[in-house]
Image (cartoon, rainbow, N blue to C red; front, top):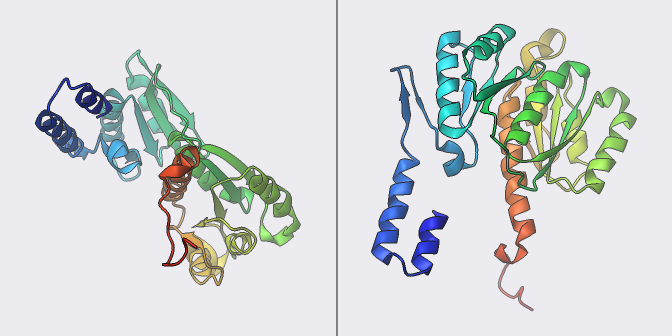
Length: 277
């Protein structure tokens, strides 16, 4: 797209030719890759929507996931596989071509397949992640990996739950001093931590309920309802154990903030009539 605009600026192509080129790019970004009649990979999702196409391994035959991951890595240089177990990780290692590597994040249940020369372009976005207990770390790690794969820098602190509220104060203060753009709080049990955090900071907070707890709290229903019933405005809530959803949302917020931080003049002025005075 930039090449087309530069050629137009240099009078190498006409306005009509530039329009045709831009329309073709827009159309190509809607194309899907059909993989052996199994799935339609949205290989241009990241360019179009800001979030990479992610392959959910859960519920798929390992062979299908392997084929999808290899196709994605071939097309975009990287494939992200979530809810992956150790057996799938081994199958991916056995299947990748020599120009690719496999990175396994066991706690997060995330596997990356990428070309050896693939590099993430830092966006300048800064995400903070807090996990209430050690049982919540797996979901928090999924948040971290996704946000980092979307170009963000991540600060994290784990085992800072509300049972000892003093534990969260130092890491939260550190995140605020480093000017994070958004904070993700992962919690099970009573899940009061994200509500408490939102009452202390002037940032958007994303709550991730986890399926950790006893009795009625089992499977994450109680944590989810607690977060949804929050009286602290500014807290958004994703689904139970949805580290991918929280990580991608946090990264979108942080990346957008970073974009305007680099170019503050691009920010549109918002206000009521009379604000000019």
